Image (cartoon, rainbow, N blue to C red; front, side, top):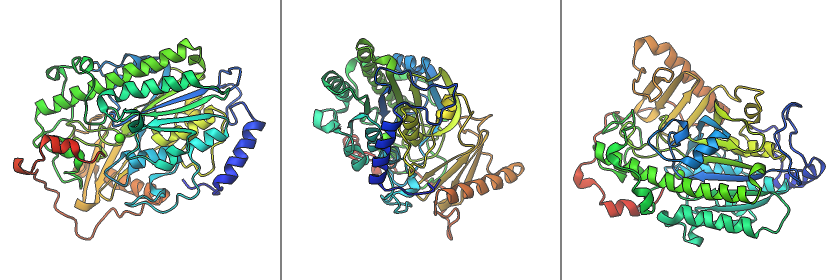
Length: 483
Ligand SMILES: [Ca+2]
């Protein structure tokens, strides 16, 4: 998705500012029968964007998980629109957070920025999300983790706080202290401008600890295993011993996986509780009806699925599939199975707030779906992980290809949403594999992904886990650099 023109950042800000003055009300592409904004006295909705860190798409009660308690996210889902097929486009690093957040903050594809891996040095034309909203008349506020993100994108916010500066890097109190600081910001605001808050605490990222009252809510024995649970991944996906995968020993026992799930759920329920405090404060101050709230996560996570424990894979319940919920003025109620990329949030928020979308933004506004004008904005989703994994899916079929071991998986997601039955070697599906490999190559070309789908000397796909004497000690594992 290449923009037709690359407008300089300064030029865009000048023009965006002028456009905001000339067209202070949203809906530049809205149909006459769709009014995305419930106009306040100032005519623009506030924006509260909450970005969880490492959260699976199946960890919101209202979206079908009866084992987790998320009453406030449930309310958000009930009065909003959940995009149930939202994906991070890919990662050029084991620290999936970094490319994911860079895409969000720049609106640029992972294949078009240059922090290593397979990326190309093409970031020059980017207009940062904070700058776009600020030029559109917003007061911009950021509070999030500093590591594994995109510093220029965060520092572009008028107020940029890092969780480490307010004692919120400590995971047990991170949700609470982050919410406290946002409430302080809301109380102390002096401007008439609407706000754009970007809140990204390091939760439920490991170490998965929450205050005892939340940890006590979950008995690991009562939490079911993921449908795709396996003790060991059946082959080498190119990233078998990355930091996250070393958070649990091999084989992944049922007890260990359930413990990880319980801890993860406790951290999410704690985050949910503090989201509830923010929503209550907005309601008490009369601002809730005019505040667009968006909840998402920077990446997904495997927790025993397919024998994996991290986000360095392309399974549906793996690294790239994330939750995404919009709620607020003009947002209909329900769920959408339209394909979305997480970084679609940038142009979507622009359009919902009447802010011009910078030409350099490569993702797509979801407003045509939100407004009911279209069922979707793309037909396929393409995802990537470093040099070793590529995937493409349509509404029924999904192919994952591993170039370094020359292995291809094919799943019928209609019949097999948890990817339990690999059809890639079945002769009757050879045509479908070829069709999807061609579609994958087409998507690579579209986004300038130059990673070859075949290598000269593929490695054997068989894989044996490290033995117990090769495992890191528990404390050492926790101290490993976060991804
Ligand atoms: Ca993350």
